[in-house]
Length: 211
Image (cartoon, rainbow, N blue to C red; front, side):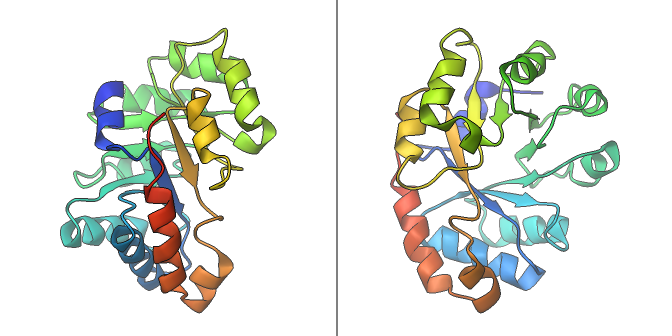
């Protein structure tokens, strides 16, 4: 299932998804809490985070207002393990026919990834109306505009190379949402626990509005 309008409505007025790759369950929860305090409510928890399923369940119970999903789903085993009620979306970095077939019958928004116009259109033609463009650093905002000019039916979420300085430009030139990972969850945050800095940065990202 891929309800485009419902998904983007769930993002609210802030089309930014924080992509969290934490080294431990404890650090993950601290990061999620800091993002929430900063007003950043859309968070993708990658499966490289230890106990990712447990983290999402606990976070959703503690902070029910958050919009949480899983990222880096690469095979059917991971797909089954992460299909839980608390998750509202699933993201893959690639396109996989086996995953296409699995998610067509599931009531969750699935967002496969592609890095070329052909791959993105392949996702669209397989019935998935939202596509992850990765890495966005290969294209930049003008490249996204170039992709969408002949392919306006795509709904792109840009991941990779998104910074505070260019996020609004990506959105203004056609991206439906952007993802931020390492520019938010820095080494100082993940290894040194600088959660006060994270909260401050999350607040800046939370102020980015839909184009």
